[in-house]
Length: 276
Length: 321
Image 1 (tube, chains in turn red, green):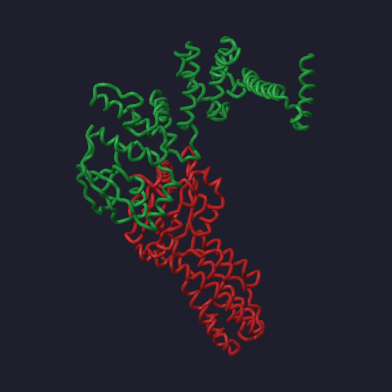
Image 2: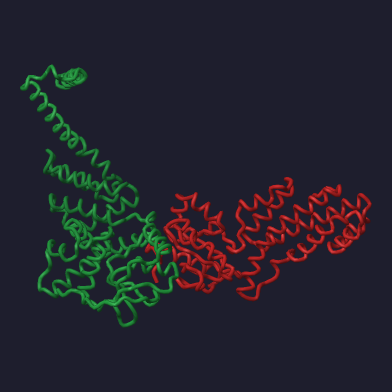
């Protein structure tokens, strides 16, 4: 079946070959409906690593169909990671469009005149995409070291969302462990208690009178760390589970940033460092 | 030739049940125009039904391949179509030309590729080949467009394949476009007309020019116009055939790195420039004679008189040498 523009046939066959070679012959469909509710028939759809990679072959880096169907992609109960595939020259000449594409959570493949394909940047499932502006807004109140660590987690999140969430959960864990050390210095809990496992540390903190006012924040951090520390290890059993996992990643990441902020604020108000 | 039956039905059918018409001369669909049509269809739906005919295994498009491609891209479940009777092959082709060619600019190669078939079918039906005027009336194409198509039709198959491969590439990656071949063929035709000894070497000439274009020794398709001018200098300028042939041989020699522009500069550029100024001198002379005859010297602008003095002095310097 023909694509929207005849020039995309060359791009489609090049990307197809690339996918076959890179992902060991995964199931690939060309110009076929992905979901009856999605008003877009992508040039290529390919299930890889529990994600549904949808690729639009295009003469430009940011095809219109991706712009107009972004909202619908979020509604589809499948972990859709959408890409554009365009000529190398078009990418070189339209850097602004390519930057917008990345900013909006889409990935990009480029194809040179000999048919060689390069993945310029990856996409993450669109349901878990967090715009840069929202991230900046959410870390606005954090001090520099916290911001820096959050940014590292966000960079990882953009390429591998579950890993980014796990990393952020580890940062929240680090805040808890530091609070325990600070509390031990002040003699609110013992040194042995501060050096215990995370679960025991949380119990110790909640047991100390000085932390009475921080009960809600500690409980929230406890639930957060328990839930999200290892999400990348939980392999989804089907497409729907995969979609939920990726959709939850978005909530988890944003929730993690709020936990960081709340925990740091509360520890500071108790006279502790609130750092790592 | 019979027209298409007027029995028509309007129906809503799935785009999946429709196939493009294999006889559609339009092979190339550009993304920019397709996207603006797609956005319009997304907002307002398909306002004008497609025209299709029923074939053995589904429907074939007579008019509306662009709308159909957009409908497929937008995953539309059904689209409006007018169903017509199945036309004969010649009717099918002629309908396509008349529906499309007047509406938007096509690539010449796409027109040329099916024009040959129209000529063959016309000959089979009427016993003689259509001339340029008949072909123009039949297809709705201008005679100029038909002539350009003929240049492409007459190319050996390997060059036609080259154009098709290029056309299938995204526009930015196209090098050997149909414009390249049209300009090159025009120039070769002009040369062979004046120097028939090149007749038997046309394919070698094509290969040499293609190779030089690939290596950027020829930098633009418009350079071929200068190639034509080198040949027409035989008629227009006082240039000897031997000299022209010598410079053309250098251009057609794949081992000689000279490009068309360079060769043009080295050979006839000055003569052409000279001829241009000949006309300017004629015009200036004619104007000044009129001024003297009509006794309007005092009406001349002082600045112009000053410029004429400067010119007079330059001319005197030049003629004294």
